[in-house]
Amino acid sequence: MALNIRNDGDVTILSNFRQLMNDPRYVDSARDVDEQLDQGARKFVMELAGVHETGASFLGVLMTLTREIRRRGGEVVIARPSPQIAQFLVDMHMDDFWDVFRSVDEAQQFYGRHDAG
Image (cartoon, rainbow, N blue to C red; front, side, top):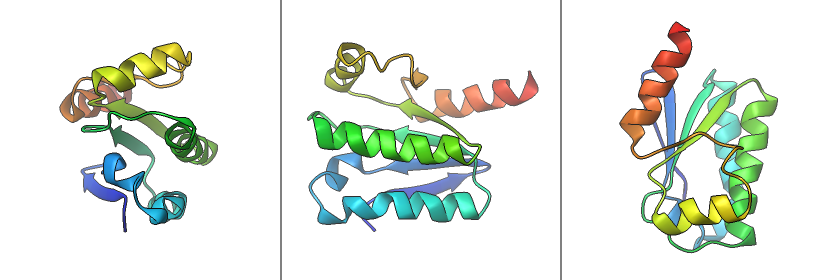
């Protein structure tokens, strides 16, 4: 599986996007997320550490995963974007589409505060 998936409590962390984009199995990432959703996962963090290259394929993967997660009642945020990715999101007017956090811990804390409110 090219997409790394780890569960920390009730938060599912998706990572390895840098390697994912260089692997033909990136098309399987939606299926991998579907499996997590089938198992009841609803809180997702897309950890973008190490990703520096942007483009249509990269945005397409993020959008595909996000749409499926949200369609099935889940939430998804972005953690650890590089400066290039953060600027790309602003340039593409996508910065309002995702909550963005400097670290995975901050993203997990967001879900904790969100649940309490």
